[in-house]
Length: 178
Image 1 (cartoon, rainbow, N blue to C red):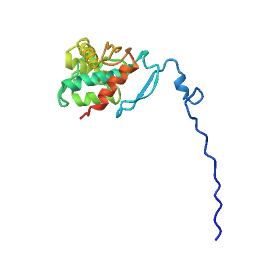
Image 2: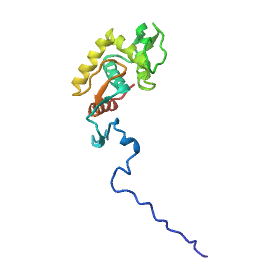
Image 3: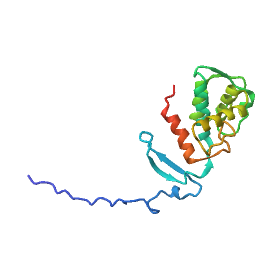
Image 4: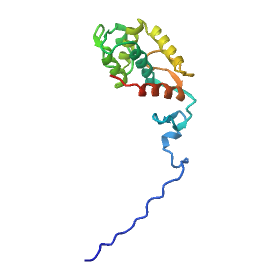
C-alpha cells in the first residue's frame, strides 16, 4: 500500500507586534477612544485615548439603569408621564399614562436603548429628570468617576472619559440582573 503524499504548507507569518499596518483602520480614527479590560482579572488589554473626553451617548443609560436597579423593585409599576413620550432618538413608542413594570423599562433602555423608557424611569424615580440627574451624578461621584457629568437620563449630548465609562460599565457587568 502506497502512502499518500502530504504537502506541508508553510503557515502565514503572523506579526509579532501591533504596528500601524496591522491595526484595524477604525483605530486610526482621531475621534475614537477605546479601553478594553478583562473583567475577571481587571487587566487593561488595550487603550487608545481613553483619557480624552468623548460623547458617551447611550452608555449613560447604564448609569440610569444602575440608579433605578439599586432603588426599586423590578415588579414595581411605572405610570409613563406624558413628557417621557415626547423624546427624540431611539424609542419603544410609549403612550402617556401607560403602566409598565420597572423590569420592562430597564430592558428597554438596555436592549433597544430606548430614550422614552429612560425618561419614564427617571420621572418615576425622582418626579423630574433634573432631580434624577442629581442622583446619577451623586452615584458617579460615589463610584469615583472623575470626568463623568450627567445632564439627562438618555445620553443625548453627554460627554465623559473612557476610564470613567469603563469603571461604571464594569460595575454593572459584575452585578446580576433579574
